[in-house]
Image (cartoon, rainbow, N blue to C red; front, side, top):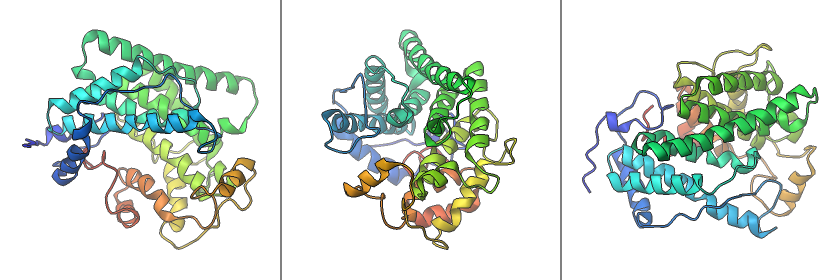
Length: 338
């Protein structure tokens, strides 16, 4: 297949930085994986649920995991199309995007829905190719979804209560989804709300030292990573609008950069940590007993590879560490440009 790559074709979602020549080998491998799906039929669900459940606990968990595999597939197809692989890949992405947008009904659970970041990426890449009616319907669906999260967050914050899951990683995933949707829609009002929630989360979640709330709650670096990844993704979306949320400090003096740097000694092997020993969440012990990986034993630094690849978009000095953890970055980074 002649891919016909150009520098402009390398640019993917709007939160990508200045494009570089496309990694042709990665694109070729992606195209090979996607080819069997070119004529596939989307199988969206109107509801997904994995939060608080174990594999084989109930049918919806396993069905959700299976269905959610369609989300990175649509993003990869959109990226392949944008990188010059041909209209068939754009069409594959659009088919899956429209099927999910016409079926899925958000339940405002950020742990269940964090994986939909791939769908937002897909929309950001293919929106100019949608018909006016298709774009209007998808935009209304995404806007309602983001506003559902904002209403939920503002209601809880107005109550004066500080529920744990409005401070910990749950809130980071809420902020990510709202920020990505706001950037993809180029909605100024929605983005302003997202910005306020992002910096409130830095105040609530990150100590001036860089330690995050989740580390004290879960006694696990696994959850430090799970807390920081969505915030870096939100910062990448904000960068597309000319704002640097990575180094900017919150009122407490905390910054996203300081939190990422706090993790560096554990990621480079200078320090080690036995995971979940003093977790205050009983479900962590249940997952360890069920034999789920990463819920017992020492923290595996490779678990932080994607986080450091993302963070290296802001701080290139982190790239050698990212490469040590995982030689190749997630597929969307080399096809996006760095």
